Amino acid sequence: MPTYGQRQSGSPRQRWSWLIQRGTLAALLLIGLGLLFSGGRDFPGARQLRGLAIDSLGPMLSLARAPFEAVNTAGQWVQSYLAVRTQNEALEQEVARSRQVVEQFNTLKRENAELRALTGLQDIPVRQIGAFRIVGASPSAPARLAIIAGGVGRGLRVGQPARDARGLVGRIVEVGATSARVLLITDADSRVPVRVQRTGQTAMVEGLSDIDLSVRYISGATPLEVGDRLVTTGQGGVFPPGIPVGVVTRAGPLEGRAQPFANPNGLDLVLVYAPYLPEAHAPARLRRPGWCRRPISAALRTWRCARRRCVPDCSG
Image 1 (tube, rainbow, N blue to C red):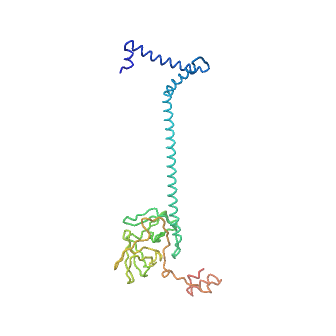
Image 2: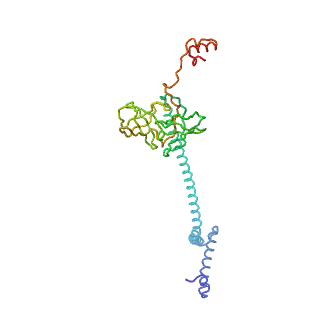
């Protein structure tokens, strides 16, 4: 097919034909525009010519307007896409915030339930130091330890027992200014005197540095049974009596296995008690005689108390 340059460089007849075509098109366009904008003047055949001009110019104007309409449509589509994308991002952020609120609510709900369970433990005959949060634990390390957020300033001392809502956790072995370490009952160095609730016989629970506990018989001829519940006896001090320790999962002739009620891998809040002192080992308090409470001079009262051996209660 000959190009534009080839057409111009062709024969004179071809050049004249090309010029006539272009000139005819331009003339028709000018005539149509003139008729279109001369609506106020009327002459014979003007309406027919204007109709013909409109019919001829309509497709050309539509064709010329098509690219602008396409650009306008594309712009509207881009604006709609950006608006939808912005709305989706806002919805995703809202969903993320809602998910965070739900997680916080579930955490607070769980902590509230644990605190209610801890505050409901009123049957232990020792003073409660307070509830503390577990901030770190090593339930699978050689030394089974947990770190609680509380130190000397909050009343924590070495030897204080700790438990959660399910059962005994361990005892405090180190105390700092803002934290303390608890030796879990699953540690190999842990020893807890227990009593079998079903039979009343005593035993010793030892840690195995595992998730289970070893149960060794101390008294009683009744063998253990799977499902027996073990609680602290209070013997030897430290651990108050009646705290759930575990349930027997395997019973042998001389030794058994038990699973602790307090899950070492799921500790969150613990309740710390003051060390338990059995009444048999507590110092006896002498009762003051009636005459010791009379309003006499301090020197005479001290002399009489010394003679009657009631000095511990007669000094005040």
